Length: 82
Image (cartoon, rainbow, N blue to C red; front, side):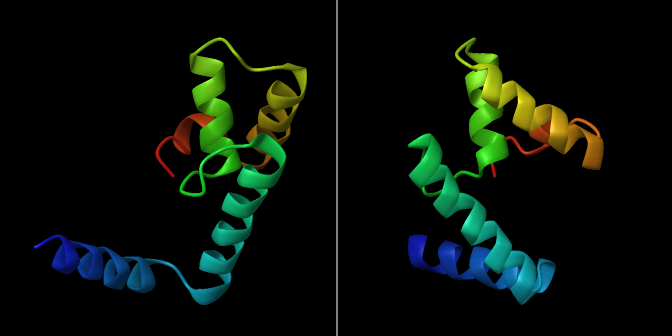
């Protein structure tokens, strides 16, 4: 059952996002592991949002979110769970 759910999630992701977008997402997750010591399953924005919610964000985390918010309104908040 779990295998079928993972396969369905994989197929939906491929239909939803193109190859370039998925590659950028994977790079984002890799940078989260390397630079933020975060989970391989979480983007930098999502990780920073978690840190902000828990009151553990530093000045650099907040700066990254401010820059990303210029590109997309409430980017770090919207990225929760990615």
